[in-house]
Image 1 (cartoon, one colour):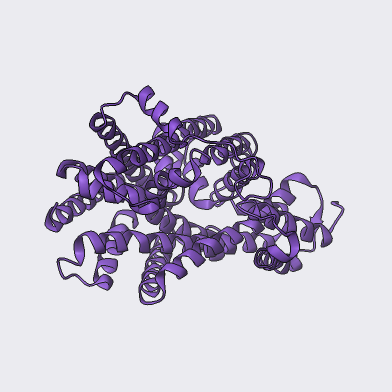
Image 2 (tube, rainbow, N blue to C red):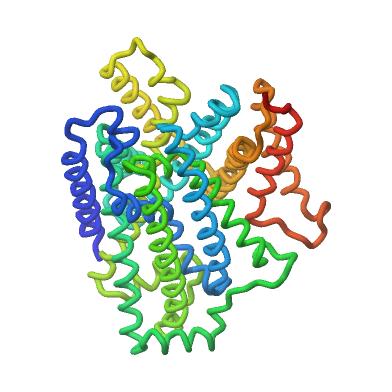
Length: 481
């Protein structure tokens, strides 16, 4: 497939997003941007959130990991399901009862202004780092597959892509994102289903026959019984539970879409439907990965891991399927960038600048301020993406993505303390406690061999982080009055 054809595809894709944005953002105001005027369709939100929850990393890495881990990711998925149940039953009723626009306002109402600022600051830091790292991966893939051969420099590619994202999120915000995420999720799922069907057809296998061959190859193993391993069953389940609780239920980007639905009941239905669809899609990704490992040896492909799926598609599938794969890939990649930029603008405007509290400020003035914040985050994304490119990008991206895991621990600790206790805090000390938790986690993580011998902490580091912050908050608390 030629680079020109792929370029035309990407251009047409962005043009479609701009048309959707134009139709949904007419007469948009600040409420449209922040919470979609509380009129989002819960079915659309549910389907669109599947694409937001995953990323291009999921699209490539989950199939590739099957060769090493089998279907062990199901352990984490079980934890995800339990976490979404907790969000539906505990957090959503809380957010709707308090009529929140930013979920971190809860921390101010329950714990105090420093707790509120600390929670919002950790979200802004974490989401800025993770979204810019994922955006770098998007631009880099487009650069390698299309733009290098056309002589387009990386910096220009980054500027143009960010400008396009800015254009379709600038006015409508959540009101637009609900529709564009739905479109992008549809593209990703279609790519996944069609590639899976093609592999079954090429190998002349029915689904049941393919599962039998997967079992013979040892690709369907699930449960890890080794307690010392990071992949141990209960570690993975607990980690999945707390990842969803912290990185979904206490994350402004995800919850902003949920609370844009008019009623609590519809928002809960949205989360339940999203959980069912997300689970099915992730299982299908693992099934696709196992099919790739069955098919690759028959055509002489030796690639494994993240390189397997692209190697099979670009080397052995027909041009139309390469187009479909590419649509699926960019559909998986972009929701994490556009949703993050919208959520960061909302959180910074509401939580840091306090636009909703400025009673003397007109709606138009609030809108101008929000526009400036949106442009500022676009510029920050540009700077960070270029830093990844000019630096040791492999290690930098890995480091940034790992650091984002540390930044959700304080949110987990703060929300848990507010919900599970009735104690009050010496609020001025909260920022120090919120910083101490991740710092202690880093020391523990880098000295695991000395502290635990053969035992290895994996995804449960987030749980430890939250517990340390929770314990620190207890130390600076007193009985409620």
